Length: 415
Image 1: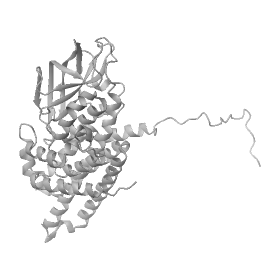
Image 2 (image 1 turned 120 degrees about the horizontal axis):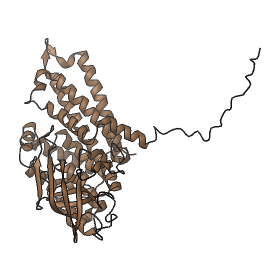
Image 3 (image 1 turned 90 degrees about the vertical axis):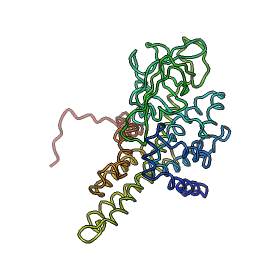
Image 4 (image 1 turned 135 degrees about the horizontal axis):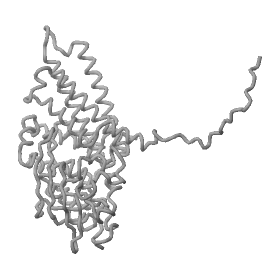
């Protein structure tokens, strides 16, 4: 494994950090999240045009940059440093890989270039608070229970001539209130033989009602969508038979693969946020004086900062390894989210009274850590599912062990 970055990656990191440093101060971030879209549209277009940010991991034949997922993770480490509010995660890490893996050639040709250029944003709508399970991060997504069930659960799809109609609602959709394209997980085939498939819904489709939700972390805007007899297009194979529950490509393996990419990207993003929170805390304790000396000179404070540094660096190593081997993404995500939560909490404590105020930006990092755990965790479930997949909880195979039959007559001890 060669963990060294290439000259192109270093240049991308430098350019991105320079742009974000000028446009994403704490005041700019707070102003952007209070807009209707929840992010700075002008900055999004700048990042799309100059760096091709949303198309980093999209193939060149579809208008993307054609880089590896590691490049997208590297870019997200920089966006995490400033807590950039943008549709990058929902568009580039969730929607685009699913369209590339499941979409028909006509769908890929029509949608991926627009996503790569930043002209179109997309979001994945999964019924209920089950995004982590749908992506197979905290549990197996094969049973399909995460998509709801019965007449009152999830989203239902009904065949209508040469298309589909969707009914239902999804309460928590990342960037769902502003995305121009929605990928909706819905039930098909009736209630007795229900099967979950993915459907494409345009943001301006008649019958689609979207409302922005109040969230813990404003830099991760979420929307509530209601589908009232909304026309939809099946993602993947064309419509064949209204009574065939096998119509369309099974989305579960593609969702699990997308989950590995999302975990890798999120781990890098959380590491960037944790590193920046720690750096700002170190700067503060070196400047803040108490009893005639900086509080950073006290041994107890040094020990706390040293522990944080070790935890952040360990999370960064795990995130970089996951960028090289996405199969390790869920474990890297667990370590990165834990590092961010602890670092952000300590940052608030070490900033003292000012760290608890709304005016200070320390609370923004703590909210990002808490919100990401709610969406893609929690940490103990990420680790638990990874342990199950690795077979750590499997019963030992005793078939090859010779059975010892106790003697019916106890032997006398040797004298």
